[in-house]
Length: 103
Ligand code: AMP
Ligand code: ZN
Image 1 (cartoon, protein in one colour):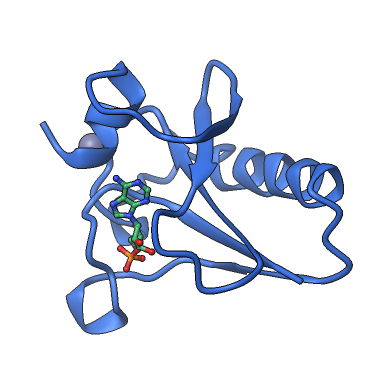
Image 2 (cartoon, protein in one colour):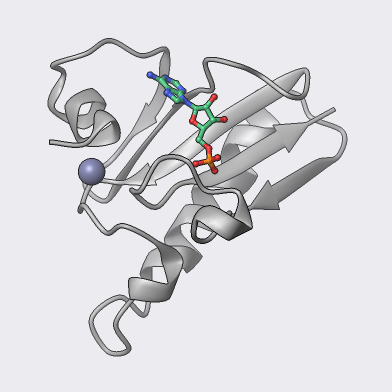
């Protein structure tokens, strides 16, 4: 099981800030901004380029909706939403996650 699947199942702890039927969000363990959250679909999908048309059409939209709410909740005045895709794209954990970095 991948590290984010273990966080989703509760096997390893995380500072969770949101959970719904589709995704969870928790604090990045090595924050690169004053607010740094990871928004992670519960379904194990390795990377954005593996998303299937038809099956996953609403997933990224949902993650963005959650990010907007969390950014407001955390008091961010501005923020960046980022997916790293593939090793060469800087992706270290091979389970889709959206970075929310806020200031
Ligand atoms: P990426 O390079 O896009 O794959 O980002 C992976 C992110 O996951 C990095 O910013 C790490 O700091 C973060 N990370 C790795 N393990 C954990 C963990 N156990 N809890 C919270 N964040 C983590
Ligand atoms: Zn996983």
